[in-house]
Image (cartoon, rainbow, N blue to C red; front, top):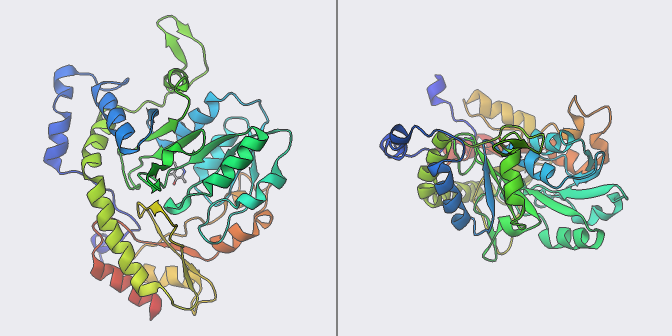
Length: 368
Ligand SMILES: *Cc1c(COP(=O)(O)O)cnc(C)c1O
């Protein structure tokens, strides 16, 4: 089979060519291509509204957004940050690149987010923050995390890269904790090609975040911080403005795909699906299946699908505490539940335009 017939784990959402061209037309009038121009301002406004939040700052990608929101709090060098290893490399790297020390907490096997009952025993006098991850679009136990953070006076910064548009009882996910990072990478539910944002409660952070993403330049003749360059450009923002118009429709199409997967794979012995969280409006970002004592091992299913030109992903495997760059200091044995899941989980193809016939074909291969 040719590459064209390959079913990948995801496929980027795009507006029509005409819609995008129309959106970028003004840029040829103004020649204003970056540095927080009109498209950037418009997208910030649109997203504040969509995410039901009060403060947002855009970035050129989610990773630098996370680095900057951690930096803005000015934690003492060497401070400890409680996080999980069951996530994308970015979460831990952002902590380490801020000269902070990740402390890995285990996850729970129901929704794959941080096991809040294990956080307190990891807190020391050096702990300054908790950076939990809303994995696959599932919300962390935000109430419990909040309680612990209050008790020990810790900041909470959520990696919300997977939870664009997710709400709990009508409250936008960006309202939990002190801040949240969203990724608008091409592979995410909502994309700006590459891009990201942080949302936060304290509106006084806005100025410093804007300065940090622009070399720490604070005025025409002053540079107060050692900042980097993490600005979203106008073409990215224009893509976001277009994609945001269609995101609800895209999420509905994803929902249909997820429902078909559930119909076919639910109640099969040895296949465990993620729980459906009560009161949570999902964005259907990922479809993980855990093969636990199933007739085939996870890696066998991965191979079988691959042979049929269907690319699933071992997401998240390996665990971050087993990465070459971290394994001399950490081990996945310290997070046994995360290790168990990482060895058995497979994310199946999921995107808005995935045909239900293809979903059936994937399920047939798994069940055969
Ligand atoms: C995608 C992702 C990121 C990084 O976002 P980028 O926009 O790709 O830089 C961080 N954390 C998680 C969990 C992600 O999935």
